[in-house]
Amino acid sequence: MSTDLSRNAGSLDPTFGSGGKVFPSNPADPLMLGSVWGLTIAPDHKVLIAGRFGRNYSIIRLNPDGSADRDFGEYGVITGSFAEGYASGGESISLLDNGQILLTGVFKEDDQYSPSLPAAARFYSDGRLDTRFGFKGHVVIRLPLDQSNPAIADSATRDGSGRSSVSATVLPDGKIWMTSVHRYSFIDSVGVLMRLESNGNLDLSLNNGKGFVIVRYPECSTEITTHLIQPDGKIVVAGIAIVGGREAAFTARYVSDGTADPSFGSAGFVLTEIERPTQILSLALQKNGNLVAAGSTTVAPTAGFLLSLSPDGRNDPLFNRGVPLLTLIDDNPYGSQWIGVATDDSGKIVVTGATLGGEEADILLARYLSDASLDGSFGDGTGIVRTKIGSGADHPQAIALQEDGRIVVIGMFFSESGFRPVVLRFKN
Image (cartoon, rainbow, N blue to C red):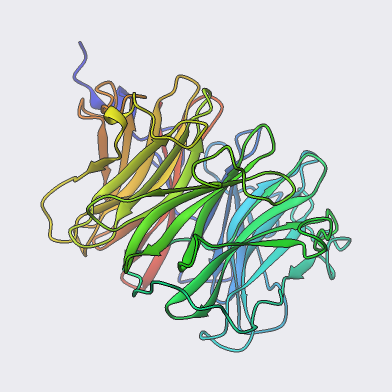
C-alpha cells in the first residue's frame, strides 16, 4: 500500500493552479483584497465565483486548470453595482440552461448600516450585462415589509456566525427562486422566499399577487441561510429560529405555489433541538431523497453539526442512529464548524468548514459515509483534511463537486494587507 498521501482522495489537485491553490485577484486592485461567497461549476468545469471587490460585486471565472478565463470580463473578472449607492456584494451565482449567468446578492443604499436589500444581475456567457433583465441588467428588490411587526414569543442575541443571506436557483422556465432575510429589528428577523419572472419582475402569481412568502417558525425570529430545489419542484429552506431564547436549527419545505408542504415535518417545518444552540448553513440532497444539513453549534467551543432527514422530515435512522452528528476537530477554545455540504452519487457526504480563532483557523474538508461514519479512504485515513493557507485566519465559504468528483472549495485567508480570496481543488 502506498504511503504517498498526495495520491489520496482529499489531497490537493496539482493540476489546478499552483499545487491545487488559486489566488484570484481584481486586475484593477493591486492589493488583491476581496471577499467570495458563492460558487458554481459549469458543465465545462469552469469555476464561477460570486463575491465583492471593494464596494462592488464581482464575478470571477476560472478555466478548468485554475487560470483566469481571459474571455470573460477583464482578465476573468467583472465588477459592478446593482444600483447607485453605497455597496453591492455578490453572494450566490447560478447558470441558466442557455449559458447565461445569474448573480444574486445584497445592495446597501446609503452606508454600511443601511438595510441589505436582495438584488440580482444577469450576464451573457462572456460577462456582458443582459440589459433585458430588470433595469439595464440589474434588479434591486424592495418588498413592503417595513410595516409594524407582530410581537414574537422569544428573542435572543444571535451568537451564530451566519453566512450569505441571499441565494437563488434558476428554474428550467427561466423563473428564479430567491431567498433572503428581512430584519425588523436587531432581535427579530424573518426569512423571505420570493419568485421572479425571467425578466426580473416579481412573479405575482405567487401568494395571491405578492410574489413572496414570509418564512417564520411560529412566533419566533427566523433566518434563512440556505435553500435548494428538489427534482419535484418543492423548495427546501433552512437556517436558524430563536426558540426558548436560544438558536435552533430549522428546515422547512414549500410546494411550488408557495404554501408550506404538510407532508414534511409538522405543517411543513422541522425544528432540530439538541442540548446546544445550533444553526444550519448549507443543504444538499442525496439520490435517495434524503436531505443533508450542515452547520454548527453556536456557543464556544463550537462543533460541526450534520443532520440527515428522510423525505418526510424525520431523522434518518440509518444516519448516526437517528440523531444529529456533532464533530469536534481539536481542543482549541473556539471550536470548529461546517460551512458547506455536497453529496456524491454514491451517497457520500463531503463537508467543508474551519477551525476557529486566529492562527488556529484552518480550512477543513471531510468526507462521511451515509451512516455518518468518517470515510477512512479520504485524506490520511481519518476522513478529515486540514489545509493552512496564510499565517492568520483561513475560512471557507462554499463547496461544489465537479462531474468527475473533484472537490472545489472557495474561501478567504488573512494576509498582511487584509482578506484575500482563495480557491482550492481536491482529488476525489
